[in-house]
Length: 313
Picture 1: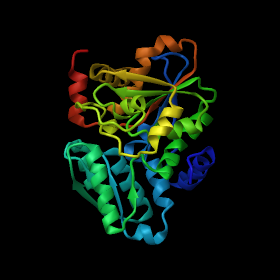
Picture 2: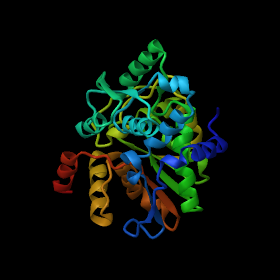
Picture 3: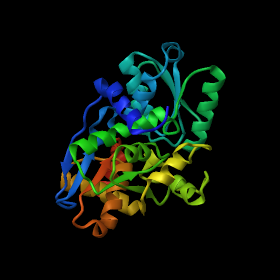
């Protein structure tokens, strides 16, 4: 299987019965030509269920019966758990010890999901979980380093293009690169990759031309945090498909989250705030152009949200 428009269209047909078509909202607060793809209202609270479902539904029945293994900082694990529950299957989700408590608690509510912990950051957790899957002969569902997962994430791009044709540019937060690779394959728009300054593994890997592991600092964008798996197919995809890169500070992310609550009455998580902040930082470059922003998720902890909303900008 290759990541192509055809594979994304096939994924859309495969997963459609299990998903919502999330709405697109015009944002006059950001500009009359700015459109928000509201994936925070997707099942599982983020886009991650798209790739998880496509990968799981592509498995042979005997492989699925053995129980899948995955690794996640939270959203991918929740997407996998939601997908497995929908099809009546089971699995193990490995999380780093740094995973947000809210996302851990949400995962523990799913029947048939075994929640385990390994490592302090997502990259180490991914490598360990893959080794467990290999040792036990169970299918591994990567958060991003898998063609079926990328094709599933690309279905968001198909929807967005249909709902809001002729976008000049689309802003997308980047972690391992699966979402932006899928969207860029599905949409003809200029693709703007957005990162928190505190977690830039794929950005630095793109610059180096190989997977590197730069130092990490805590970030509100926990869904994009962590290193990139060695040999990840998303590196070459990101290098060829991303047109522009924008890095934003933690203060800019927090301000974007406050902005979305104040101006749109929408609660979004840090990764979605990264994309909003990146657009706000570069808005002058896109004056008069039709722009899309992917609000990739809404799974933010209550205490984190309360702290952000009570901070003085």
